[in-house]
View 1 (cartoon, helix red, strand yellow):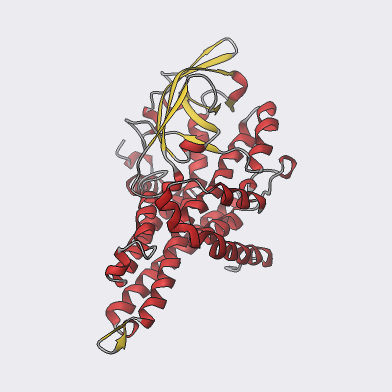
View 2 (view 1 turned 120 degrees about the vertical axis):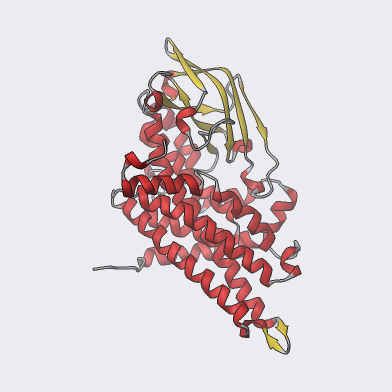
Length: 383
């Protein structure tokens, strides 16, 4: 039997998040883009709601909701502010710490992450490689009980205000993907430096690069076994990509709703714009695509809850959802006319913000290669 309904608890959570999103996030969405100041008060309010510990076990002060519920939460928050919604993606990184860190690191950091007192980020890409993770050059050389980290990681979300970084580096240059290991790197270690980017959107995500110059780090900060980092990263991307899709969906759906209300009251030739098929039909088409992506994403989240393989479904979601979300928001901007192009309406900012999700954590081209591999076999890959 197929069941497309959410539980009563999930519906209550959805309502709570929508109320918070409408009252706290949406009114300040455009303000953050102008000031580029991190909203510490909103971070604290979201922490008080338990949103920073969504995938962290209760023993560390977390709130380990299932992934379908996590998707609902992210989508509802994104209706108000897709940037603040991404704050709730960070607990997935904390889950890496819980699954792979030493007990000492878990005991010290997980309570701080769950309470929102500390922030974490993920460092995978480098200036010369993004999608080709195996081509990374950052190195971790072991000497006794310590590793020495050298290299640069780029395009890191929350780089400029994180307190620690989950970082991937080469420990065995001859082992290709089997030579990549992961580390939990506190940002206050000697030899760690960072710089910020000036992005066209997503100002609160504060992307940047980190530079590692002979950073000495204890073996206890390695996450999992040496050489298992690549596989750890790939399994994490299967979830991170779905969460970013929920961000795109929430922002696009809110834009459609706002535009429907606008075209009902805006008139041309003595009639509301909504009466013209050139206006109503595009909205219907975009809404249909968004709903199809909505259920594909939740199917993948459901599969993750069940421990089922969903790499293909996740890749389908990631190439399709941000793309159609951007198209929908673009259409909404156009239907607002010149007003949509001004900063008086949130459309132009949503467009700039959601474009970033088209490449974050894997471009559409890479996702299509993944789907090709799953459908046709590895022998038909271009590499």
